[in-house]
Image (cartoon, rainbow, N blue to C red; front, side, top):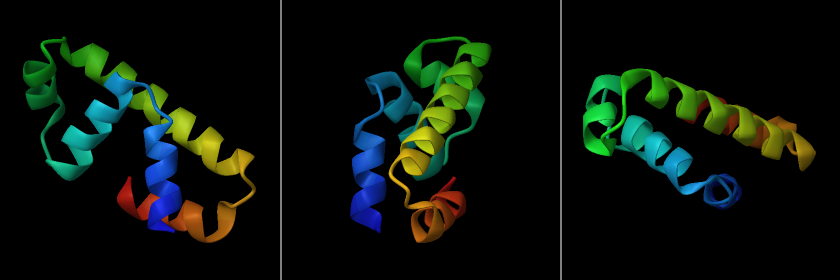
Length: 76
């Protein structure tokens, strides 16, 4: 299950992966992410929203909503 989630994350564009990594793995706030990435706060929110939307689409398109979706919900 972790491998599948990692594969979905790797399909994201670079900036989206970076925001996901900084928020969920490094546990930075949106303000801190904005500073690290040198973008404004609203851009961080927009990139995060697009990343989560794309991940949901990837997960549902592979018809693996059961356990993978539950794992993704726990991570995100």
